[in-house]
Length: 213
Image (cartoon, rainbow, N blue to C red):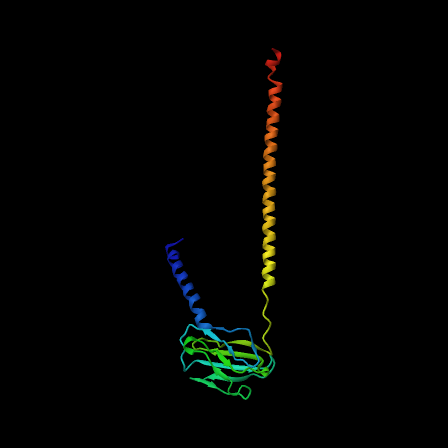
């Protein structure tokens, strides 16, 4: 390898590493939100939406929208937005029941829906744009409203089954170990018997010279 090529390799590595670290920051952000949540009719539910960005939030450039639609193909309505400050559009659907419960300084754009109704079921979408990130990202949250709390799962049966299976496996392993030890012991005894038998035959026959005398 030439001296010039040897000198260029570290430079290329550094350039590649720099490009790898820079590209994600310049092209996108990452939003975190649950795919679906459940709420009991008449209770409050917090719809969580947080984001990660390589750039600090600038209130003059940052934008955010919360939207609602009843189904995938239904009309999308914006009910919360950010234009240098948070604005609750107070849709007739939610009236005074929707409030911002996040913290923009911590990249938290969560909202809380109070006194959930059956009609509140649907898809809630959190849109975020934080310049100079080049693309706006979003996450959908499917809200399901229940009339009563789902039954708690009884773990007693699972514990009993797990203990039974574990005990059975322990017994099987113990039996296999005993069988293996017994077989080894038998093999050792058989080897000793065979050795003793061969020694007896040798002593009985004697050497040819002793027979001639």
